[in-house]
Length: 433
Image (cartoon, rainbow, N blue to C red; front, side, top):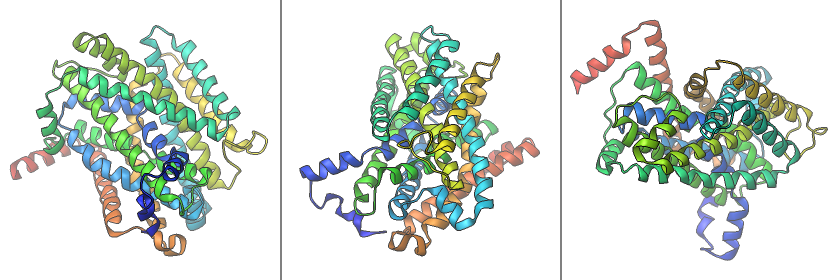
């Protein structure tokens, strides 16, 4: 690890340090909070509604993994001045990069569709038809990115992050049993069933989505952050990760304290907002629905943008929000087509919104280990990173994440081939316990 990190507090809370930190603020907070998107809110809502507080314990190790993984991306961007796709192409070749890009493109397309599903579901709670809200949202997103500058886009995104305060308020209005919440945080009580393992993969997949690593590293590079001022960027990353998981915590708590306690069933985040209304009041329901709309619109900007970033990096094409359409045609066409396809998919009659929103997050969790293996190879290459390679703790956390997510994915796959396998494994572990 490089010594520049230790200089973050060297000057104390001086005006210069504060101004420098605020000027570098953005990539970490934006990337982590975008992850609380429509699919994320749906997944956390389902976790609380169906499993109560029993999955809260997952958020602690997931926070540690999220901080480590996102810090690795930011550090690679600051040290090398290159995006993750660039580094994969240079180190592993164009053929490997092409297949990685295809997998990520399909995964991210499902995520982008889920954002417009969130916009449709959220706005319908306020009486606005999806045939009005979805095309209008698509147009706003397109104009912001294609016609705006990086500085403007970043400011809009940072303001959008503030709206996530709606979920802590909704959770406190739900009046949860905080002792039960505390037990759920520190005492794992989840049995291994197909439903619980799928939810665990989904929770990790929505919290540490593969697109995040590519987008954050590209943002660090585009913002011009270098290893000399990286210490402030690192603080931005940590703050963003903690904020994102805190929002996830309050969403789970709000739904567990109300919907789960009442034994109700929900299918979407919009259902969760409606279910809260008779249980804890109109204000909590309004805040939950408003947060869903904001998060969906916010992520509908960032997810197709991340797709454009990593594909153009991987293929060596011009990219960047500050470029014109003529200067970076592939970048903006990828962005435009992702939005157009995703919005159109939601307008199809009978579109399975909940399946799209939830399963896209499960796929994220399944793809994550493969992305992390590439990252670990790169971050530990001294020819590339010099003295900024990973230390043993960061390597341990990252590899444990790879093994755990790979193991859960394998369990799900085997249970599909041999139905009932997870119940037998759960029964054996219960006897051993």
